[in-house]
Image 1 (spheres, each protein chain N blue to C red):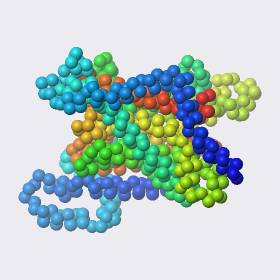
Image 2: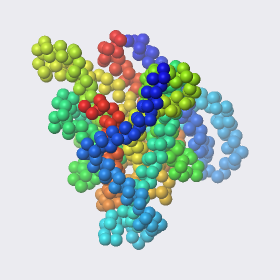
Image 3: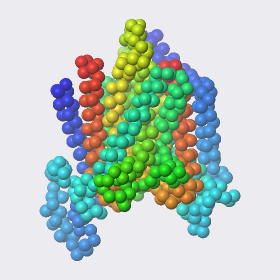
Image 4: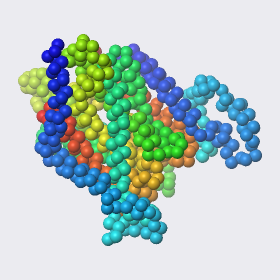
Length: 299
Length: 322
């Protein structure tokens, strides 16, 4: 009994760092993933450091004399419907979209982990109830319901948006954690801890969770891309970030007007391509992380 | 088999019930009810009179009574009145649903006729240049958000090259029923359909490729080869038949993706379907229409998952006899 317990503990302490080095090794080996990591770090660095060399007030200031100017030396990517610099909006938008994507992913992972761990650890009727509820939630037309919520919330802010999005983003995660948790609970180290009288929550948090960490990290990387896509998409439709908080979707939303799609490409095309690049980078990194977590993927 | 179909259909009822209750409460949260809507812009109706009419319409009854009435009306095809279009919601939907069905069926057909051959090629000739190309395409299609892709398609093929119309479902100058009419409708479908289906292929290609790689190693395939079955026949009669049916199981989830996608695609190509109607209605705060659309979409997914379960059951002997 002590031996199996020790094994569990050992796995816990060494598992994480070795997984991280496996990820790094995998990324270094895969040319596409390596390039993606470099590009993504570059984009994030520029977006997050932009306040150092860019005044937000100046980027957001509306200048009616400068509406829809094509790219020039002063405005590298021209100006938008309010005479604002598109390049500056792009940087602010990328920063907001990334931040919100990360927040939604963290929040929804928290919900998904809690529910999934409970279902997976306890099994039995708890699992039955949670699984039936998940079955139902997964078939909801989430996009439409999110839009309805966004419209109904009074005094709508960014925080409401993050909360609403995360409510609809955890179902798949919970199901994933649940199914792996169900397999994990049959392992010796769990029964050993139970026999020793360790409280359930401690086993869940400090023994089961670390063994699921690689799975969770893979899922989080891949859903981060999805969440950024959903946020920009909702903002594009006009039901995302409140006006005044630019997102990459805000610039693309102007392209709902055919004249802008056709004749003023500088307003929406750079933002559309930037989203595409960010999504591809995150996904390539995600695939490398997946391979690092699962030896079968490397074949 | 029949008992399974009946059982599976019965299982759908609690899901539909739960969906309708959820949407009913969502609808209750929406500002304005049938009475405020009907008397909007008529200032000579006092609050007292409004209250009286509300009482008459049963809007002060307990929720369970109201819910019962709402669901009874919905089952009879009465989804309320649109405040903006001043006509019954059912009538409004009937005018649009045809377009969305066209779009969805065409998108699914193109998706499968692309995805199945691609998955087969990638699964059969693993690690070949074709496989690597397909896997790259799959990465990209998984990562690309539908609205970005649809906009790029519109820009390149609708405006720059001017190959296809950039919006609408048909040219209004052409009379209905003529061959030109059908042709023009198809022409208007090309860009929306391609924008949707080129991205939807992801799960099918991925699944088929993995499944074929796994099946290649199985004993029954080795047996077939050992008996001298030609390689093409091994793939056609043994591996493919084994791998292809579970694809039907994705149909329900494809429909979820299709509905979400149609909201974006119909908005971008100004295609007059249900997705576009949803966005227009929520913009004008026409909440009876919004409620009806959420209800229909939810029900479509529930029915879709049921259908794919049944197809899977009929098609796959392992499940049929297992």
